[in-house]
Length: 62
Image (cartoon, rainbow, N blue to C red; front, side, top):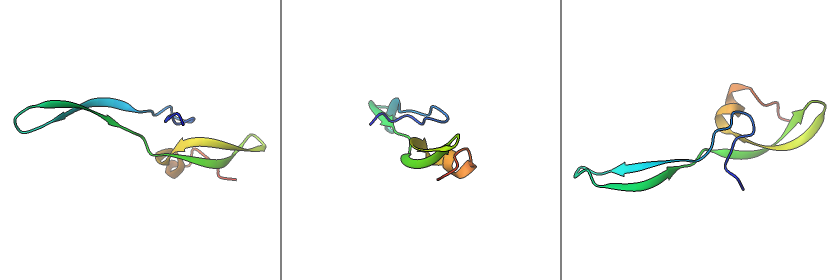
């Protein structure tokens, strides 16, 4: 499953963990993606959206 919101385009990003000794190791941040049955036009369709789009009302659940 591709971790990408179909509404806002939010996706996995990468960066570094930094310790107190300033050692750097790679890490990733994944968005909170949920499959939701939503109304797209007049049809009911399964879309992958992030929870921030759900809470803000950008998606109408079927």
